[in-house]
Image (cartoon, rainbow, N blue to C red; front, side, top):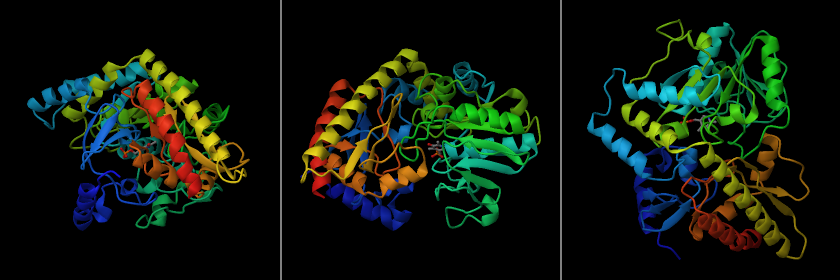
Length: 436
Ligand SMILES: *Cc1c(COP(=O)(O)O)cnc(C)c1O
């Protein structure tokens, strides 16, 4: 059994001075049991915990790390930038270069404003949409996550359309009164009160749920018909799904994009962008206020540029191909494991959806229909099997995300050998899931 005493001790100390011991709730292991491993360092596809255990890492900072940990080009870019000063409160060439890099890769995205997190990106894009249209209502989809700003903390509830039910204590009903939550993969009815529809073009915060045929196209049409802006929240999909993100992947062009995660190269960055005539509403050009002391931070832009410069269309295709075979192999061994176990009556099956390099993992009651929205994801999560699988994998040195609604992130640094070993480990771990 691996040693965990140092992580356990750190978690005890953390709980005294940090609420729940963590700075973001999913890290706490609440939904999988046990205490989190504390990371001492990372390199490539692996992290090493505080007790010196090596873990093959499929968390990769929830997608913020594309090249793998401590990639030399990122480390060098950050080191060089740090030597020139870490923040000035005046514009820098790095910001211009990152904005140019994003606009060059995402067709139709003419301007970008940099912020410091995905939360800020989504919050600000909504404000722009409201300012531009002069309308208040927003439509979001159940199970899609757009950060933790008040107005967007609604809709982890049921898939039935609800109006104004906050998901978190501390969010006043008034803050979400203009937020309409509708089921994913169903085209909502819009009217002239709706400023924008915000969507994860490939849903990746309720496990991985791809858009059904015609969904994104239908949203575009419905938005056009009612003068509503369409916002793609590409904080996960941007520069991960492919060089042009989900709009290139789907052929559907939104009015506004939100980015984060990959574009910061592991430093705190978000961005929102879109058509010039829409973004013109922002101060100092227009009446919509938005700002940030550390926005466009020189270390963050250097890291982001280093990442975007290190990949091309072929890198994404190669990664996607590897993950496609990995996903198929994983699904096969897991379902074989379930079938070979017990008395021959298999109550559950495994689904491993793959979109580009994104990979999800659902344990579902046998004979379940296709995964189309949040209700399906909840049904899978409540089987409780993910938590057991997670622990069995972690005991064997493979770190998946500690929650059933997260997806697995394979970095550019994961080798074929790493993926084969993961399939092998999964074929052993599945027996512990069945044994209970
Ligand atoms: C992670 C995420 C966010 C929030 O980004 P933070 O940097 O955590 O604030 C927003 N939207 C999506 C789709 C995300 O996955």
